[in-house]
Structures are given as C-alpha cells and as structure tokens.
Amino acid sequence: MRRRTCAHSSRSGPLDSGIASGSYASGVFTPPFSAVVVGLLLAVIGLAFRSGAESALRLPRPSHFGDVAALTLDESGRCIGDAHVQMDELPNGEVTLLSESRIEGGGGNRLTAELAPVDSGKHLKPLLEESRSEVKLGEPLGFLRIDHAARRMRCAAADGETAELELPDEDHVALAPMSLLFLPLARGEVQQVDFQIPICRGGPRLVDAKARLVPGAMEADGTGHLVEVRYELDFGPLLSAVVNPFLPRFSLWFDRVGAGDWMAYRMPLYSRGPTVVIMRTGLSPDALGLVPR
Image (cartoon, rainbow, N blue to C red; front, side):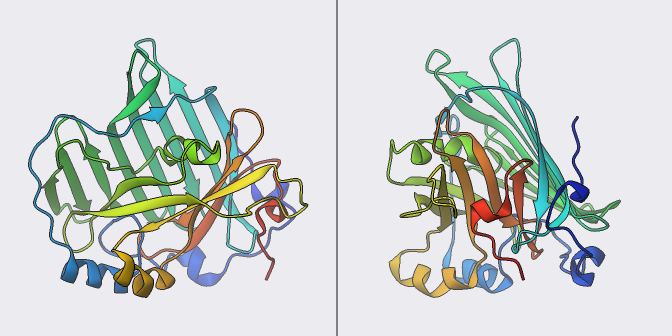
C-alpha cells in the first residue's frame, strides 16, 4: 500500500490541539452529523420498515481498479494526515472498496464495502458496508454495519452495546460507495441522486438525502476540469431550510475529463468530529477552492 505523508504537501503544519487530542469524540459511532440535527431527527422522523429483497441502488462499474494514495486535509487545505482508497475486482465479478483516513496523532476512519454485479455485469449493487472510527489510535468509537442481503443495520458502541434496525424493501442506503453513486451526476447523465443515510446516534435510523452538481463548480484556475457534487439531508422543503445551514458541507469532486475519477471528498471524520478533505496526491488544494487560514 502506498503512503504519502504531510511532508509531501505545501500546506502542512502543526495540528490544532482539539483535532490532535480527539476532543471532538462522542461515545457512540454514527456517520457524523450535528448534535442539534440528531435531536430534530429524533423528534420528527419515525421509521417502520419491513424486510425486502436487496438494495435498490445500481452503481456504475469503476473504469479501473487499484490503490490510490491520498492526503487528509483540514478545511483550509492544510495537510493533517494521510489517507488511501483501494478498489479491487474479485474473480467472481464482485468489487471490494476500502477507504482509510487519519489525522496524525488523532482520530481516523475506515470504510469498507462489498458490491455485487447485476444487469449482466453492467452495474453493481451494495451487499455489505461498514464504517469503523477511532477518536485516536487504539481508542475505537464503535462501528456501523449495513448488511443489505440480511436486511439489517447494526450500530455498536465502544462499550459493546448494540442496536439493530430492519432495512426497508429495496433500500437506497449508501455509506461507502459515494464515488460510484454520484458518478452519473459528474458525467451529466442525471440532475439529482436520491438515497438514504444511516444514523446510529439516538438509535439506528435512516434519513433521506439528495445530491446535486454544484452550478458552475470548476477548478480555481478556470480550466473547468473538476466538478463538485454536494449532498445534504432531505427533511422536506421547510425543515431542510432550517436545519441544513447548521450541518457540515458534504462534497465530492470529480475529474470532468475522461472516466470521471473522484479527486477529493469532504466530510466529518467521525461523529461530531472535525470536517476533513480527502484529496488524491498530486492535486493542489487550490484546485478545490480551499482557502488557507
């Protein structure tokens, strides 16, 4: 596995004490969202689902496989750790995905997914997805597991306490394969992608989400090679307008040219943790419009 460190970045420096110490941590792992939003979710969202057959998501096959070295940046583009993403094709046609990112001396996250071929191999569907986070090395926050075949979502805290939710018929849950899920947006084939995000805090539940291409998104140098896809929780027109301004921004950047490879993505590292940008090595933070502080 290839590793790059912050020594290779033009924007490296000492870590903020809060990030390095992991003071953002929470006791129960969930895909990271603001505590205020979690309270609203508990108040306004009640889900009762019955068992179904499989994931309804159909993902485009990746154009190539292998390991991609990357860096973990803060929102100003300063390098604070390393990262890497690996995608492999198995002999039976299934695809595995691994994404790891970590802050030096602080927390980290590991996402994995298993995807099965459908439509005579033209597309993939999620079989199994998992996320594991640490507030710092050796101190786990817990894990989230989505088993599409068994129709189960399982949340586990660091103390071993677990809770489960039965997934709905033909679920649209997406945790790990966002770079494939949003590829049709980056290619201009669709205008919106609707899916569901799993949340563990306060009990396992699913929240609707939508992704769109950011109008006019392009590289800061004006070449237009990069496009940005931004996604957000969908609480309906009224509540979304109130809640979403308080949430972190979730983005993926794609190369508009060629196969539309992902180039970077922005999300909180773990529950109530710092927002980070995972960027391929060789790309400048300036290309993403990240402004140094």
